Length: 185
Image (cartoon, one colour):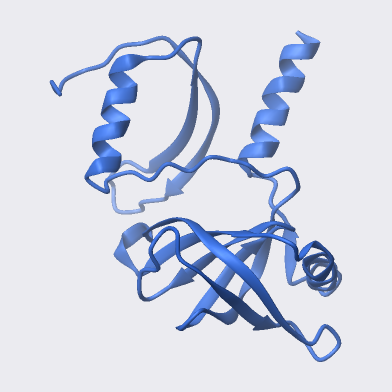
């Protein structure tokens, strides 16, 4: 693929700071873009980045809210322990760990919130896996099926104790805001 500048018209949907640098260098930001139509040059660039593991395709299939842990829960996934549970929803979650878990892997996600909720053991599948920012370990996104009731109790308990909060920055919320602006415009 030829490399160089790609110039297309797009709309910035969201932007947030990624890294605040206090040493005189420019801060880094993350942003979400939307294009009016498919852009073959960008599609080709993304394919190349994914093929070299320089980018990971993350599609937002969530149909419910995601909850971020104020302090990650410690647990295990399959034979990998410890893992930190960074966020949860009723059908998924995000882990942080020292060793990489390959996409497509399945296993039991095990953790405990407290005595009242008891031990949690749900089947999950890794839908994406990547190096963590700054090269400190790895991150993985999980899909969890058939455990809604159990996870609903966990999320409720964590929120009631102030140990989890709704993720106001999730893609779903960002897209909902864009859709609402389109309707009202």
